[in-house]
Length: 346
Image (cartoon, rainbow, N blue to C red; front, side, top):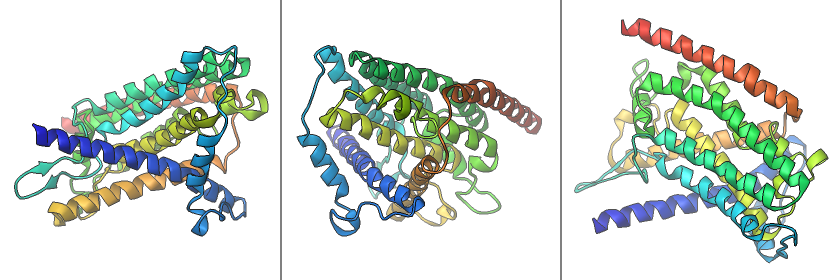
């Protein structure tokens, strides 16, 4: 029992550090991608190629003056960014990061918690995350922050419906809501190639819809109406400074990392890769983890690419897209999937 607790604790710490490091360097990559698309250089002063820029930004956040408005609700003002950061980190607990490490005497899981309702757990935790934004916007006692929090909550509720329908479609295909089982179904052979039976080949429309919903759930452009500086200044974190602001910004990048990992698990086979049946033991685990990270990193880049390419929607366009287009299309896609499954089962 003690050995199991030590193993799980070590994996929790490893994923915690991995999430923070990826979130930290996502800020660097974001600026580099923006610079590339705008024909600029980007950060290049702090360290070689500017690689120490995230550390400089973190130090700056820590040493900035911390201000709490006199009219704010103090304890809720402090709790808001904490809830946002906590829920962002908790959502990675059920993601399978690689195949089980098979040693001579034991098997070590690369998943913190292998629960059979993994995708429901992720949806539940991400839904709780909206409280961090709502509490921060309301506790600031700033009308612009409150407007932003209301926008963010209505946006997340709207796009979670379409996202849930798409997940139901994946569950219909795989017969499980456990993330490890969903990856396992995609690790089988397609065209004689093991590890290539990915859901994206059967659900290309579902993948596009899910990616769109993930952008909206993360408040990423072109769905960043909650942080629309032209009318809401800085959005729900207008009154925040120092590391409280840093927590909100970090939570956004961690959510982007987790969303990219979920897209990889649901549609691109997770840690599976072509020809994985030819490997075993430590080699399989290392290659599986590398495959998972490469796919996740690619989608992080796609998130950034879209942000610096597409213009921002108007708020009415954003809500119309969610309710009048994505939800009906997702429902039709689910019905077609059910009909096809029923036909082939017969």
